[in-house]
Length: 206
Image 1 (cartoon, rainbow, N blue to C red):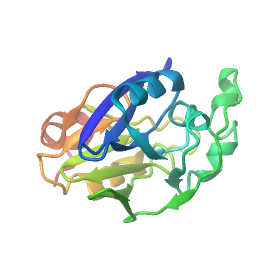
Image 2: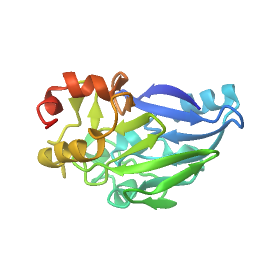
Image 3: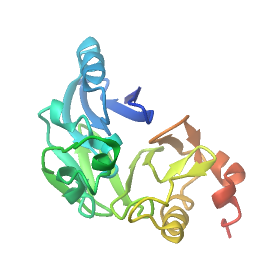
Image 4: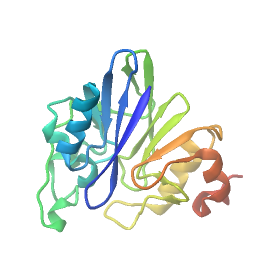
């Protein structure tokens, strides 16, 4: 499995292209903006994208969905944001960004088949009610739930600080330290580092 990271848009959103080395089949996580840059990487490397997974419904994570003509997977509590520019917050930033509707509605514990690989959906509400993380082998795509030494902001509409901490404690902290963390913004990390150095969660290990 290969992971390409493309940082897109003014919010510096991490878009990930996850690909199978044998078949070149791929899926895209959070194509926020600059769809042409993402498409160029796909074309240059010969990837065959199969679907998109949005970790939640904010505009900086869904803004490029329209450009790929691919099935879109998103949690059931975030699906409405795809087509509502007020709820995905783009309307308040001088744009009206909408996405095609979801092709598959996800719930906690769902499995997504990707070649010989299984992607597990972890529902981690808090930044928004419909946030998810994706677990693949020893890799976590954490969207705007967990960042390197930080967590997703909860001061936006529908954010909940207690809920995001509960999600991290329940869904992520029980996993082993070796899990690599690919967040929605900022640099990569791993769970062992976050358990020791992330101010927001290190005191909640017990």
